[in-house]
Length: 456
Image (cartoon, rainbow, N blue to C red; front, top):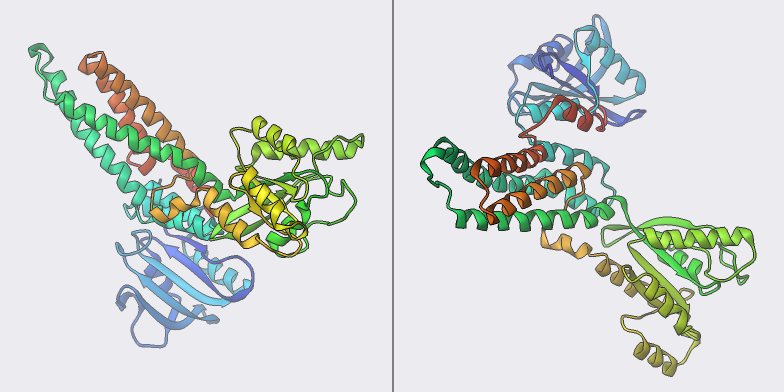
């Protein structure tokens, strides 16, 4: 965790482009750049104020490398908390490398993956969960994933954890104080208030843990399996949702023999649709493999669309599927409603609750279906500004913290001695501290920041 050197890296994507940004951070950042920057004004970079931008040229001796804009961010008012220089140069790969190599020769070191953000954490500019949210923000590819990352980066999750940890720490201090007076049989911590706090912490931790299921699928795309018998219009439905000819459509039963997947954003949430082989009895070995994969996708999906023809719903098959997958959210969709009369539609609506009526061929009901999928996915929780967990490390730490809190609660119920309860309280504090970085190790930090891109 040595931080006294000066690091450099390309902060924009590698390759040619209109412009590129080279970031330098460390105690010598301004001095090193000043020696090779010729501004159009008379003032040197050292004389300029923080958070200003200056036009000039980067030179290597007598060689002019490029005309650039140099941004200055003086410590501690910078991303890393150190002196930071950002050089905006032309996007030629050759120019980028020439400038980086120039400053490497002057004593800079190439930054490791995530090292700028790690320095921001070590210098107190953000806590660990906020730093991890930076990586999630960069990786976000939907409005929902972006919203979750921004909420965590602003410190919403951190505030919740820090508040719980501080309240628990206050009571832990009183419990520890009791140990100093163990021979006098006194209680400094009000057991009634402590019990109320434990109940509050338990509820918050459970809510956060429960949110991980939603957060995980939003981060990676909500998987939806489209299943049904052959020729009911599964591939046509996939094409209609995606608005492109993604899957082959044919009147021949068994056309789809393997799963076909594609992704689309609906209401800012990524959905991963999986078209599967038609469910039927068959002697074709290749088709049998496709059908087996269809059942595998049903197990993996968060939502299952069961598609059938409006003219032939096969009630027994639908009932069998619902009984087999009682833990799954199955949406029944009657397709080809344009081919049946109103009486048949009324019959279907009376027979099945929460039935969607569509015509994948004409597009009827497709927009209504998308809105229903968004509602059933529980993505509406985003609108409540609830904290949603997407990070596996946070999830694991929350589970361990909850286990420790539950042991403290059990100890309270059986009037366990203060010294034994203190052990579980310390353990809960440790796991909560792991999330924000109040408790951390070099190995943990190295593992987290190694997953960042270089230059961030």
